Length: 93
Image (cartoon, rainbow, N blue to C red; front, side, top):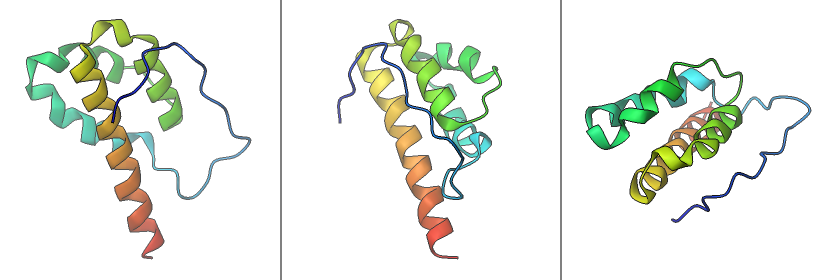
């Protein structure tokens, strides 16, 4: 899946859903990418504090020029995978 490299805003929801994963879950998943030098710039972004996954995703997109197309797509795919896995787990409860 290819993601646009624009700097559009991410819509804000009025309240968090119980299906929204904690940011720590996604950060943990992204940390696995840090062993590859192609994702070195991701570590700096991950050190910031984010209240929601959408905030993390928006920060990555704002800094998309720090990543190759391949790296950016891989990061966004990993976020989507982590969110989907979390939601599947919650739905099974």
